[in-house]
Amino acid sequence: MARLLVVHHTPSPATQELLEAALAGARDPQVNDGSIDVVVRPALVASVVETLEADGYLLATPANIGYVSGALKHYFDTIYYPCLEATRGRPFAAWVHGNLDVTGAVRAIESITTGLKWRAVAPVVTVAGAPQAEEREAVHDLAATLAATLS
Ligand SMILES: Cc1cc2nc3c(=O)[nH]c(=O)nc-3n(C[C@H](O)[C@H](O)[C@H](O)COP(=O)(O)O)c2cc1C
Figure 1 (cartoon, rainbow, N blue to C red):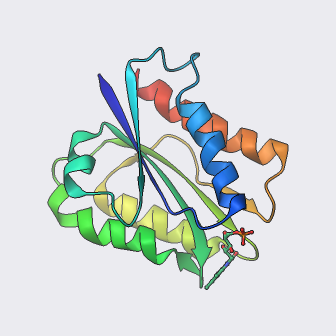
Figure 2 (cartoon, rainbow, N blue to C red; figure 1 turned 120 degrees about the vertical axis):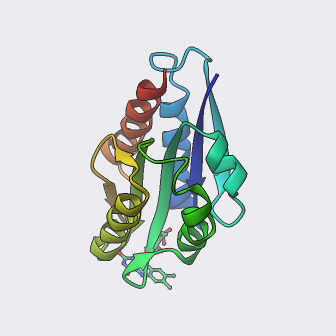
Figure 3 (cartoon, protein in one colour; figure 1 turned 120 degrees about the horizontal axis):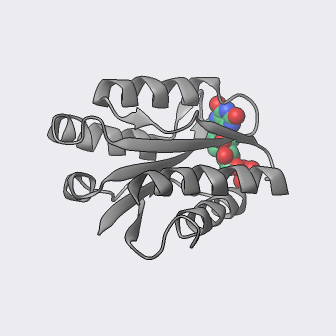
């Protein structure tokens, strides 16, 4: 069974809405007939072993002070070297929620995942303010796209 690891920092109702949309996408029967195990972990507790045991990664963070959240940064700090060789080439997707300027957060995800040599299945999705239906759909579809690569 393939495994999709969702690593998220979800500090508010707006970010929770996006997480729920993504989980619905990852579990959508059109792309996941039950053969993809979706493992959901807050970024502050997601571990090296869980990262090694996954086949793909869905990352979610707010923009915080021009960068990814400290929680997602902590995740990358934790897994970077222990997972560098074993996870090379694995697929990932990400979204960033912010209220003003998500540029630095997007750049950080692109730069860190380039270092890890993870393979983006789509550009980072960005959402500003209260998520609208089309933004929830974009995050849903992002997760479904990633899941489809694992099936
Ligand atoms: C300390 C702090 C720093 C933040 N920095 C940024 C930022 O650099 N860019 C941005 O777009 N939003 C920034 N935000 C807004 C958060 O991204 C936003 O609060 C988070 O995505 C949750 O969304 P919500 O507050 O609408 O529920 C910041 C929030 C906090 C608390």
